[in-house]
Image (cartoon, rainbow, N blue to C red; front, side):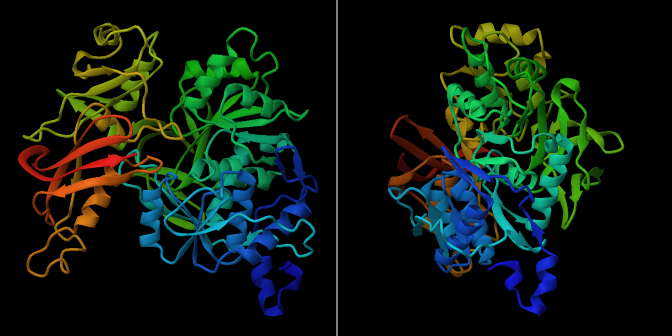
Length: 550
């Protein structure tokens, strides 16, 4: 309904609400060749809100960013909570159906099949006279996001409307977005993740930019999207995408009119060399946003100006006794997965992820730093350091590394690494591969990397596992269905349509047990084997074998 239609006793709540929409009278979005006006946008929100199914939760999997936005705001207008899974796969949706029932799924692809009640984005009445202003109370849950899975099993991160709006407002001010009124915002990142939601959806609506529906992938498509309007556009991307863009832009005959107002990058640290090459290719500044799914956007920097980050207005990062924390408006403080080093008021440097810090023979480093040294070697196109699971005696294992380096051998790469890092951190082994299992945000899930190098993935069932008391009283056993779900989620977190094709249970798994999962085979079918472990070492007792079909 229109805000003017509110009853008198509701008027104070309406005026206290925060709007996501800038008062710019110009168009709101671009969907292909269609330019969408403010009135049409508000009308479509109202029309979709009228048609959405009655369920407290909506899984929004619309591929088109404009339809995603209309669906998200229509659900909020109905008081429904949007769920944004870490990946678009059947297993993730099935898990949400169990945890958040009753739930409905919104998609703009009628050919997709999902294991829950599905509502296909309809044709909306563009002449609908009613509109809904997307303004909501600060404490309303705007969405529940889930971690990408790169550091473990996805966990829910509820994001309230006030924190979402405050973060995007502060980020826009730090990036000086107001200098680009009406410019298109082109994004290569998925809008269902924290970075994409805040930077590709909320930011353009708040600052009167043109939200774009498409997510270009190939460099030529990105260039075409940036050039579609006469005004310089803003590019929201990741280091992985940026490296591909700059690589092609540096080639003969490409990138002569490759321009942007500025480029925004996030999801992983951006190297100085890549940032400089990107600024030359785009003839524009390259900025970074630092944040996380749990807390949202927190700080920014221009990479070429040095390693120091500045916190966004209204936010504070600090070190506590138990770790590093972020505080901001409307929500409780959040513990960070990163180590920070304060530099001055509202400034800091990143020291790497807490889980990435390694200590070998009394010497300290981080997986992030070591990965940067690997990527700096000429001929290494992509790569990463990782720390495999602990050995049987609990000692820290030797570091491993994976690299894409056509024409180079592991020995050649190791020789170059010796020139850059202490010998204690040299990877044993170093695998040269053809591809890396990056997800759509460019991240490398740990489980996928361990599977790639043949290392087991550990799954621990706590002694107080909730299935124990009822399955069975006095003789607790992890149910077979739960065991299979855990294996599929831990070993194949980002597959599009993974399913257990065959399984054989050899002996029970009980609360308190830890199993090690190893995989063999490539292509459509992958065999897995699960064994009981003690301190990360196989005990020899096989508990489960099977086949996953992808």
